[in-house]
Image 1: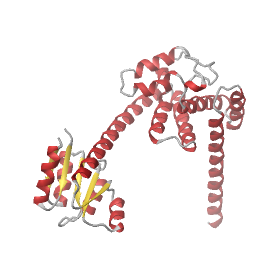
Image 2: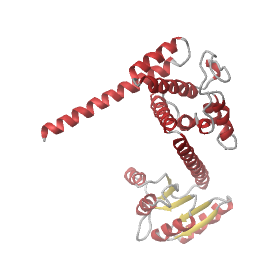
Image 3: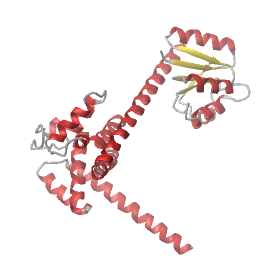
Length: 311
């Protein structure tokens, strides 16, 4: 049962809200002052906090700022309840970490919808928190097994993420692409065989909840868009765009590891794109990423030089 904390100084209003929210199936905690509300939040760890702005002593803005600064409570969604309608007040609330504002008097259908949204966000965050810890554990195993394997995974992730941003990959797909890039070679912690490491990787992640969307990144990272890849011979139209980014970046990093030169690796990748192995669109985005990196390095160098000259 999800938990809701109501911090409201008007006890009558607080009790009414408690009865309504309890009827929706939530376990409800209450507090009538700001500091008391913070203490209750730390002890009961609610899934959502309904926080009145006008509180005696520590007001709602101060409470929200304190909640968002504490590791125990910083990821709990805060819905601020206010009779204030000034834009400046809402900006102030967002600046201290409020997630949503609801105007008083409360429209309960709106409150119900906002609570459901906040619970969904909280559950999504918890799920991503679990996945993040899982990925770190797998990466640590890869590092212990083979530092080169670990560095390869990190470099593939780095360029998948940068290329994905240029190509406007949506947030959820980007999160999955990043994890897929990190773990595409996870099978190599148990098998160095080119043929076997794919199957081993799939077997490792099969028991996980994320298996269904993670599987293609592990099983199909050696595919080619013309159907000549391994192990399923997928064609262009059978691949997600995110998988096309992964296979192209994986090949780019393989060339960099062999040639130790990014420009030569791009030339090799370009030749293979002509054979329809990889995505030309992804290649162009990669070239833009590398140009941006060179520009940043140049500007950093100039800034350092100017700093020395001034000194």
